[in-house]
Length: 209
Image 1: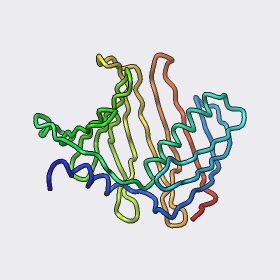
Image 2: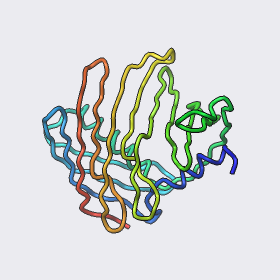
Image 3: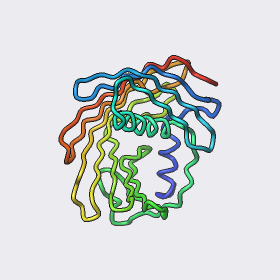
Image 4: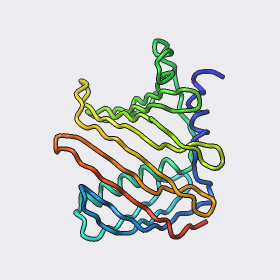
């Protein structure tokens, strides 16, 4: 197998929902710096289109609702079935890196992928004046043998390398109706606004197929 196909192989080894999953509903709790807000999550999946994610949180500020919606949209988007259709080029001098082979994509984000075996260990994307890196530190196995991300580290930096935000993320999952759904996401972040701890907890109640 060519190095350029490593990302495609690792993409296929990552757990995703079947195409006939139309969406789901879940009870939701956001706990931020020790204060909890209860609410509801509604997800509508549309093949070939971005998911519709709707969040309500009682007594939460607008920025808390927006943050929770962004996090859940990212989780749902990564579990939604999608083809990997990027042309990749190996960076030769990075072949021996402990996190794996580095490959670059010719896309609008100048995306970089680092792959070790069937595991995408790092994804880097450049957006406007920031560089976002996500490191996949630990994963867990789904019942069908594919993998789910469990522990991630994320950094956001300026183009000259100055780090402006660091996040440590831990995800857990629950099996409902034979499928794996998010159960929780814990995020510890540090930025110019200080250190924050946030926990999203989900209890999936209804699955539409």
